[in-house]
Image (tube, rainbow, N blue to C red; front, side):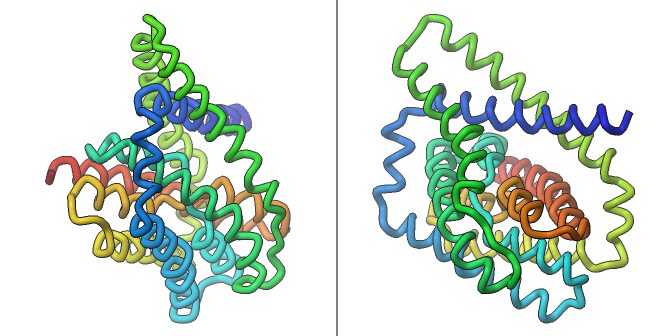
Length: 278
């Protein structure tokens, strides 16, 4: 039964990610997505927060808090991995700028592909990563569906709106199912980390990096909110690829699972609160 539920959770991730990217492509104009990437300040701030402040914060936390070494490795992995596929959905929930969220996600995904192989061996000795191993799932599951969505939008077929509505409903259902399954399947794991500082440390990291991003973000609230959510939305799938290739210690994977659950729950709550306060 557990194996079947785990396969269902894996399928939920696949459906959510592909569906979200396809829907984003169909609902956003390519020119509007590319526009934020033409502003140097937007790019510089995103890179500084996610690839300078984020790893520095993680390094500071593991020096202050007595984390298990494997949990510390997991936190360092996450601090270097940005551009998660959940950002556009969070932007939609908080009422933020969807085109900006897609642009930010694409920028951070590309940055992670270059940053992780070059910096992780320096801040977490023993970790090595192949850029293609990180880029491949991002390309197949995110960029290709996004490109297909843009192409469908340009075609302007009469059935596009119906398809978009269906894909959005399917993606939302997959997200709800994923949250329920992740908490249910990993409840014992989550409870087992309560005395290890893992949950508390990652929660502190998450809130701190989001606060820094919020303070450094653009002046208008929708963009600022998306910028902060983007900093908190770490790329757990990319971190898992590296963890499985470099470490036999299951505690590293446990830390990533804990982070995934905490991130989903905290960011979904914050995104709804941002919308209510807008």
